[in-house]
Image (cartoon, rainbow, N blue to C red; front, side):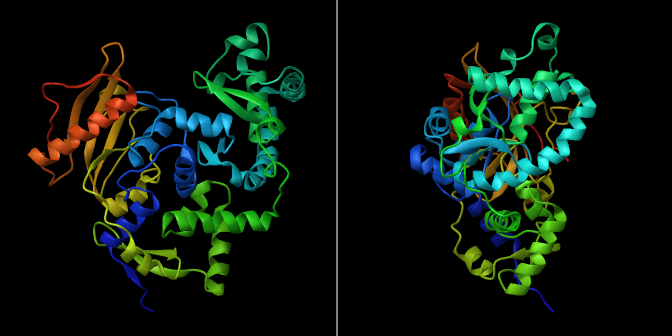
Length: 402
């Protein structure tokens, strides 16, 4: 049987539309910002602040009027969002919270043995003590628990028992993140952070699996079962495969062939109206956008390479002499095409956004009109980073690297 074919241009347009990158802008606070995050599903949180932190850059790429205090209000004051784990730490709409109870239960099973083996019986004792400390004294960070030499250790592999206990209690849903202070987590009892009815609502496991798979597919537009499982990183690959088989039998999804940038075809699942939805998706505006390396449109590097022919690897953990581009290089999107990557840093002491290099993709010329669009994007990024000007290294316009 010949599968319906989603051509590459239509696949890119649908994918960008589902990732809110076909929009030209719009309001970026309150209900409008919450709707944007619902549409994306979640926004990844990351600590690197070379220009601005990842969650702020993700939202700014879609709403240029966005400023960080708007997200803080939704998270810490309105409690319309919560922070927990997808594939990584993420900010998630609060109405999804009941579905995270499946993750909490599975984390308890997985982490109890692993972290007890890591820290030994000290970990079990510390977990109860830390929970009682938070219950008695209120919200706290890692500096508020433990004592003496224990507090001096740091880093993932040097977590002390108190830090490990806080993280365990958070991963298993007994604590929640009340706020961040200088990007450090401040934990509190979940019932003090998560409002009703989300706190008391519990779904059967089968319902959460069905929700997670369907919500992932709707946000991706088309996907393999593996991509569906990976979206929230909440259900297993086997559960995603079973869901796809059952949804296919019910007529809720169909199989299609998705054309890649190189002309190859990949078998995927989609809703029955996917070709109509792709045809209706708006044409991405021609403006240039600087994306975070953790942008949801790029999180699945293999998928981005298939759709856009764009290979990207973050080189933070690559030794400096072996880096091809740089420590933290930002992908650059123009319309429905990834046109290059840019190495830049907000040098706050000098009050400037300094551009070290821009490498175009093959076939991309930095002509006068495109240069003006790139400079406009950099000026918008400069305002997000709260610096006064954009500066350029003398040799910033580089040649394409193969």
